[in-house]
Structures are given as C-alpha cells and as structure tokens.
Image (cartoon, rainbow, N blue to C red; front, top):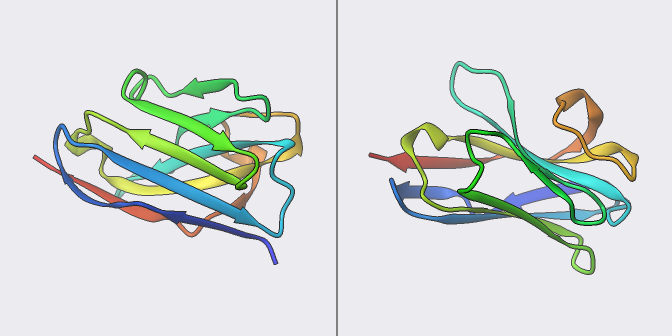
Length: 124
C-alpha cells in the first residue's frame, strides 16, 4: 500500500518557522524526484519546491530564499523547512512523488503519488 504521510503543519505567527515532513512507504523513493505543492482556499494547487534523486533542488520564486527542501533516502522522507513565514504562505501543503524515476518537475501532472495534505496557517 502506497502512503505519503505529511506531518509538522500547524499555526505559526508571521516571521516564524515550521518544518514539514513527508514519510513514504510502499513505494520506491530513492530513485524518484519528490515535490511539495500547496493549495490556498479558492486557488489552484501550486508548485513550491522539488528535489531530484541526487539532491538537486528547485523552488518557486515566492519561496526562494525562505524555504529549503531536502531528503533522506535512508528514512524515505522528504522535508520542507519553512522560515520567515508570511500570511500568504497559508495553505494546505502536499508532498508528491514524481511519475518517472530520475526526474523532477514543477508540474502537477508529472507526479503520481500524493499525500493527504497538511494545513499550515500563518497569522499576521
């Protein structure tokens, strides 16, 4: 059974930090890119960050310099360290695995397995 389980969300004040984790089970992890996306109320799900199987990272402009994506291929876990949070970062955050091995993408369509999502609320 494939599972991607996010944790670490919650309520934080603007300027604060949170660290999201996404633990994968029942699925090949180490050879695939992993991504984080988010969806704010009334908006489409948008790309946040991705990390390739070798650790190369790519970020959305809106989070560049504030968020850091990383992975632990031993623990089958991908992380999203979020610093200097802003109210506009409020959203449900989802982790996802790339559809093909040895790849990473900013497009939702290129990911096949998704977590259930976790809420992040940043108060002003």
